Amino acid sequence: MNQEAAIAILLLSFVIMVMIKTPITFAMIISSALAMIYSQIPAMTLVQQMCKQLNSFTLLAIPFFILMGELMAAGGISSRLLKFANVCVGQITGGLAHVNVLASMLFGGISGSAIADVSSLGVLEIPMMEEAGYDKDFSIAVTVASSCQGLIIPPSHNMVLYSMVAGGVSVGSLFCAGYIPGIMLGVAIMICCYIISKKRKYPKGEKVPFTEAIAVTKDTFFAMLAMVIIIGGVSAGFFTATEAAAVACIYCSLVGFFIYKELTIAKIPVILGNTVKTLAMVYGLIAAAGAFGWIMTYLNVPSLATNALLGISDNKYVVLLLINIILLVLGCFMDLAPLVLIMAPILLPVVQSFGMSPIQFGVVMMLNLGIGLCTPPVGTALFTGCAIGHMKIEDVSRAILPLYVPMLITLLLITYIPALTMALPNILMK
Image (cartoon, rainbow, N blue to C red; front, top):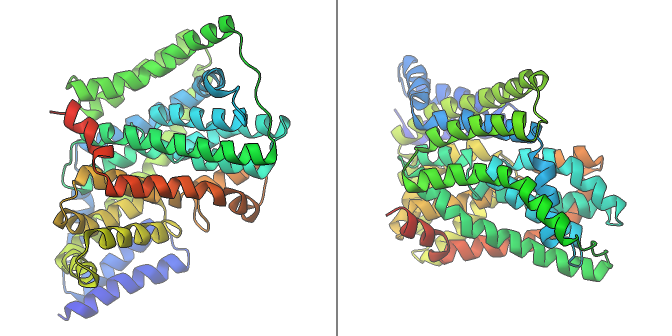
């Protein structure tokens, strides 16, 4: 067997199928099968590796987190978080833009999904901002950009994926590591929104009366408690991530049915249907990536990639910058989950050779690929925002350009300053 030829078959067939818009799951399976056939590996190995990848207790957290996000979106959480955000920052110049960002920070800290953030909050935020005098493209751009926070502020089912691929890195530590970068990202986007709002003379919001602010805060309490259950339970060692997600689903159901009373029996089939649909796509990707990752390891691709990167430069800062650029470019053309499954095993040995913790790299990777969700041509958060706002992607892409600046600055800070990601895990997870 010619190793170089097998690698060429694997990677070229994958790239060609992606270019002709073959679904990523099938592209990984077919390219893996072709490389195995050439390498004279039994076909059953493909099936075995796909099944083996799904045989993980950690993966049970994913359906619970997805279900929890659906329950919260249907149970009135998003509208209450929006009101609470308005109480906190609505009176600043460009108030509704700040409300948008803070609401995404809070919702992301509960749902853990950028797409859920855009689809549930965007329906409320975009018309509200447009009616108040904000440009429509700016309103959509802020909604899309701020959704990145949901990927790094826990809980995030994509961090569970990364934990599995990275060899069982502590999910609790990953969750703790995401807080400071997530808040930094939100504050940086708010500063950018403030500057743009001053320049374009967007309005301030009205100050909420104290009594109304107290009432809104009380009403939001039960929504915020879900985040405390998950993060507090995992950090304190009461639950595993899987158990915490299951408990949170039960809690969100009770809140939606009996406290907010917006969750009804009639909504349950839709919620379960959306959950199963999303889960099928995610688990299909995981299984396909299991076979793809195995054949890459068999062909020694991770070691070759590590040597190639280190051959360019042995300077830590240059190599980390190159890795960020690679992930940003790939994020423009592929979705987040497959990139986590494909690239983490390749790049993790490189960053570890420079002393970077896999926990820090997990957060860096999430933000890198989260930015990809906001960029054409395959930015699913961008597509969702444009669909909700009824606007062309090219128009929103121009409006979102200034918002890439705070996202990239935050990315570089968490790449080169380990304490920003590692401080909380070191304190809370000892």
